[in-house]
View 1 (cartoon, rainbow, N blue to C red):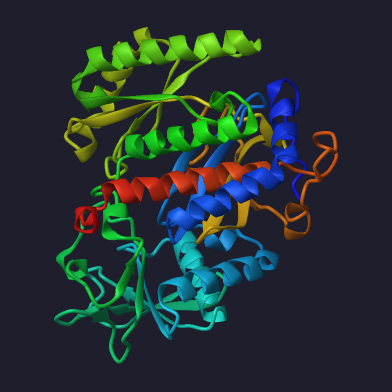
View 2: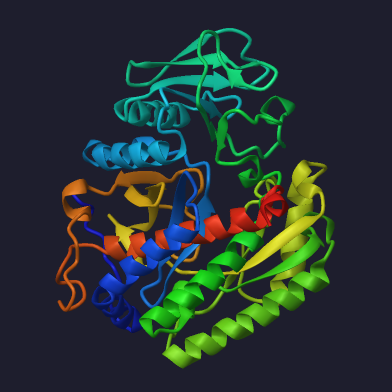
Length: 430
């Protein structure tokens, strides 16, 4: 069963959805032309927020876990996309080495890893899990909650190649976001494909760079559709070397929060939106354990700083770092009275499924990616119904899945722009 989500279909989102459905041929052609010029990330997931009047991504993950939340019926889509991705990179590939996160013992993560392994096995590859965790010194089998098990093997580094015992892969797939930095064992590998590239990890990547690229593609999509790109784009600003727990950079944060709230208020007034605007503060680099802070008025920052000082202590999160100040996007979707948001999964340039993240203890203006969150798969039989152009909004399909897929692919395209812009070897090809 598809969860019966209450989606706000009043206001400009109605017009936006109609415009997207009517423009489907133009949208698909536009994406095809973009993928002729740009390489999509190997895989990605995008958190989307549907405010009723606005639909926008709020986070893009280039090392997605959570694959076990996709329904079994979605597997063929993922397998087909995996085959296309591998064929493009290494057509003669037989062996794939997946490198998971270190300390990979969480039950949910192990289930995701097993599903990822299954997808590539069904795509016709021999798949092994090679750990770079110093604690994994020998082949280790971990039991999973469903009675199955997963086997991690210590990675072996040769002069120019990486593998595990008696296994030489063509491609190395990272499911490790490198937030602790790039370990030497992964550097200077020239004979194998390492995907995503090392500079996609959080030791290099910045959210502000991603959303700057997203702003660019959203403007172009807005022009294509003849709409205000704000309807699909979360506004943002950035503060360098700020920290609430140390009271550092509060002046910059106050200025940027105030400026962004003013911009959002103007947009709300333009569209007749009665909600109270807010912004969220996030570490620009996800390697910092800052969490997400909601701010509705710049005057709140002093109190938030005091609270953070009391909680922060001398942790890594207490070090000054760049902070993203991002427009808060409400979610008007609910399931069983719990607030919900869609997460879209992609491999290569294809949408392969998704699920709803729900949280009974959170409000419509709060982060749902928090302890206590539950996950409801988006069922295959309804999610793949294609909306029909010309049919009134909401009548041609039981959910917003095509819309979510468009926004998800826009974020994926922005990630490809981002990776091109931050590629340390790009000048070699200029």
